[in-house]
View 1 (cartoon, rainbow, N blue to C red):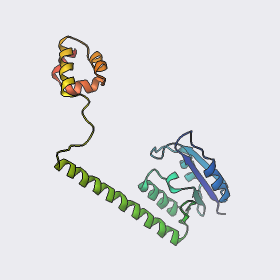
View 2: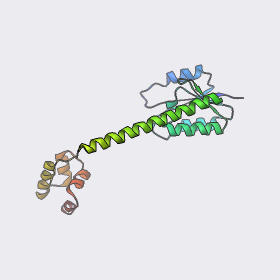
View 3: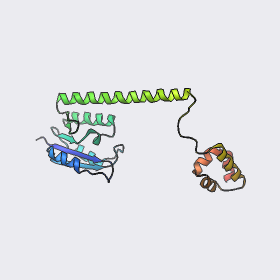
View 4: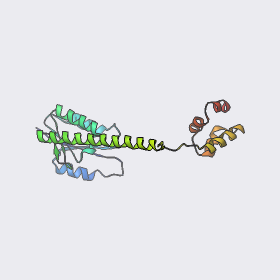
Length: 190
């Protein structure tokens, strides 16, 4: 007998699962698995338990697709796994149901468009960085230590002030200080 099994996730403890739970129960889910954790974090014990619980003929129901996968590639892999196991996927917000050929086609088109959008963004970023470099802008974060602060750090080292004290005075980490001062100052630190 096929069942509707729900999965709900929020990113932080401050967020409320209740709207998702209400929607999943209203959609006829017999059981709902719940996780709290960022979408980009891979360990999701309740998602793993949910996937183990599902049986052929069941339908996994989610409130939105972004609650399920931590990225497009992961979401596609999950849908392929579900399909191979004879399990459907239904997203309430996107009104998507992969248990039929039409729903699977819509998901595949949706995935292709999302991948195309990612590629376009990546290409625009690459072109934008190239144009900025051509105008002399290097991009990235500014150096932690200016040439004046490096000179100040060298003067402090010459006075036998410890690296941690210098780093604290300049507002940088000891590792940053070593990286900017170079190997010659490593010998002074001993």
